[in-house]
Length: 125
Image 1 (cartoon, one colour):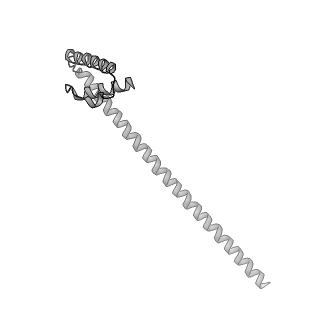
Image 2 (cartoon, one colour):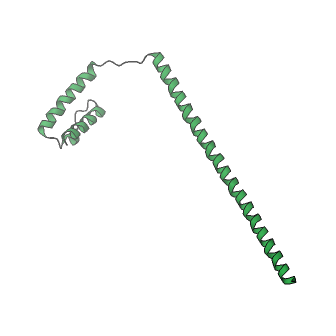
Image 3 (tube, helix red, strand yellow):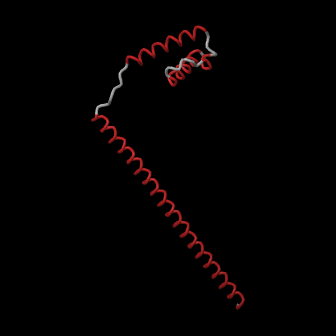
């Protein structure tokens, strides 16, 4: 509970930045936990004041952008390939079912013609 409560309170503090009132989030912390939390918040605030914003080098930004575009294009082409495979598979399955239906129809027709021929031969004999 201790670590989770402190972590949650720190997260809330980080989101609010400067709004020191977050009593709801610290209500279930013990006095020791509150002191530890306040110490951590002071350290976080000092770090934030001392840290300077850093801009990424233009070459890195350009390289990262290129990599992201390439990754997106690969995902799109992979999705298109899977879609094509799905469509072709469905077409093949449909063709197999159609061929099986035709074969079944021919078999039924041949049997019907045989039984009809056999029935005629039996009646004439």
